[in-house]
Image (tube, rainbow, N blue to C red; front, side, top):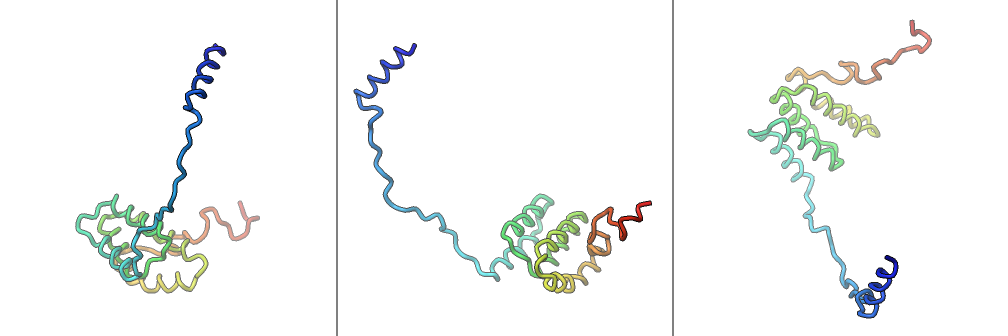
Length: 151
């Protein structure tokens, strides 16, 4: 077995199969052909996306994923549009997740979160959406004021 493998190896070397030289790749490739969008264009895109007539739950979640993937904090107008789209599709749980994600994104800027919540509060009241603090989601579920008071 070893003899036959060695024989094929010697033949391959003699015929130059293993010694072929590969031409080096010359030239650089640029993989960033995407067009840079302005903030106004991005805002208009997402506002139009969430106002679509054919928006279904899957497309709504995809749009929210696209916003979070861009690592952007949506402005209050987009937040209002998202809340209205969630309410139109009767997905209250997604409004809560969106507010939690918004709070997570603004964790370094509490003033920014307060500003956004102040701007979208009338829309939340109109749609019947509670804030995270009203639902008790601002602290852990089994949180106790004093750990020794377990009984």
